[in-house]
Length: 342
Image 1 (cartoon, rainbow, N blue to C red):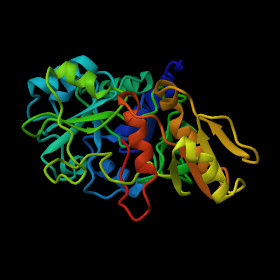
Image 2 (image 1 turned 90 degrees about the vertical axis):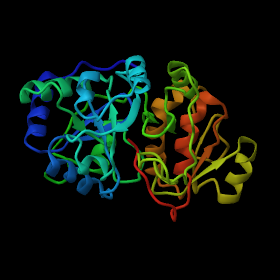
Image 3 (image 1 turned 90 degrees about the horizontal axis):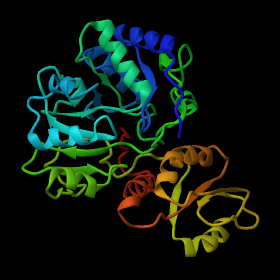
């Protein structure tokens, strides 16, 4: 997927707004982020207010390179550095011990901080310009996903505009429109605060790729493991549409449509549409094609007027792990806790 070159004037304006303590939504290769100057406690707290996000949930800090990351960590362990050198810039978040610069508003009061170095040219241009204007090469942007807490992640500027909105009527000072996100799935998260590296969220960088770079296996803790830091993507329910979403095995799809009524449902499946189902989207056949389209398809289904959303269960196996993770959490019933995407 091609990406338009960054709009220089828009980037300069956006960096100026960040320095003024304002909120800027911007594209990354994963999803759109809701950004604030990571050093500005008041601005970071404004992210939480805009999203309706609990203060105890940490946000990911986006940095320009490994040198900038060093300013935000207590120490970068050799294994963490190895992953940064292998996968940055890219869709990988490292959870490490924090430095004094990583304040409580960023970390939810925890002794750890999540760091990511995005590869999207608009995100990198914004980081570079913020560093240039501030005269600080280690300046960073705090940025969870640019959506209301727990809802479908945004992969297009119009998703952000429809959900959070732009001032004066919305919550965000500026939305940078850099087109559709190229990967569309949030970053993998690897935690280095325990005795061994732990995979806290799957992403487009697969588990075996990370393990190969580490030269050792990853632990995968259970959701209810209380010995791990709070991070995005760990709650049972999130990435969730407003309408109920249900994962359905392909062989049971036609029967489920008949049970619910063809006129009441929207369907996302890899098979051709069934008769009488007007709201039907054909899912891409590979995870590489499906990932960039997943959230846009869920946004379309959620806004289609259907009462129920049916999604064919994706295949199993490592290449599909991140897609299955997002859809399984989106399908959890509303009584479960909401989480946040990025």
